[in-house]
Length: 505
Image (tube, rainbow, N blue to C red; front, top):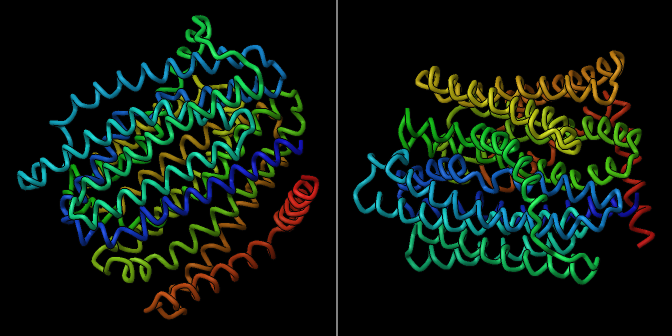
């Protein structure tokens, strides 16, 4: 138990360190981007970034399958299969990276927003897209390698690799921007990051498997067939997840234009960044939870899952409520009031991500059980729903983009929780208790947003914004804890358990 908890906590620590670097890249440095890169060109780049995620689906679903399989085998003590799994996964990753890169390049003429750019700007966006394709091609292999390392509970090694790559990424971007290379600097930073993760990740896999564990890394035909079969089922899920995450900017650019895409993207940038912070908790816990399931401790798996539901939803409610309260003042200080797409967009995006966080707890439970085909089917149909909603309604206003996300997340989240509830034997009484916890969170959040937007003066300085963040965060936290005895108990127990683990190291 201590190894799993320590790995999860260390994974979160390194993940948050890397995320702080990514936060600087995606939020703090955006004013520099807008100074060095034309707004329309930057908006088209954001839209092609979404298109890239839809076309080159990162790792073909391979990393998720590898994490589940290796974590489960490691938890069960089946070390003989680890080397075969690792070698086969890396071979598949290399093949997929080449194949999807070629496919992606075919779609260059269809990138959104290019027609609204000048010839030089269009040429720049296309060249940077090609660089991003190369970066993602390497990233597939690197993501597979770091997934292997994380699955073997080596959180420090995996986290160190990603953290160093993020630091280099930032350095390359800033050097390129201040040298006058504009958008090319962002693409170059992506490429540098992927090279480091790939080279260091492959080296780390060899050290952990061949040296520490003594597992011989080899390519095994039967393992390749098995992994390809599972990954192909998870592939649709990967497409759907990227579609649901990136489709809004893509369709805003396609229907309303690249400038609107830039405004929408900047309005929800804080929401998405906060969601990334929270998703690291889930990402760090998945290998440990799968390891727990692989060890056969089903009762503990059930307890951990329900506690995770309450913890993650409470954290998401706090973070999203604060984001809504602070977003307009933040954007005005950050890039200018022109970038704010309106309170309806901000509020609805926060609601959409809260609904998503509820669903992702069930999603992680299904992945831990290896139910890739089921997950893929649900995501596939709900992603089609989101596309239909966006194409039908988006011309009526930006606020319908997050509305489509919220409705879609509600659909797949409900489907996932129905399946998980049956798997873990969730009783009607327990389900009602969880629903009451959600209602308490929503009630406190609604009161917090209404109160601060109506009564608290808008922050006009960064210092004022920080003070408002501290005050709102404290008030909301007190409200959540005051109305939820269960949340109070979980918080105290988790703090005590984590401190006990690190006292033994």
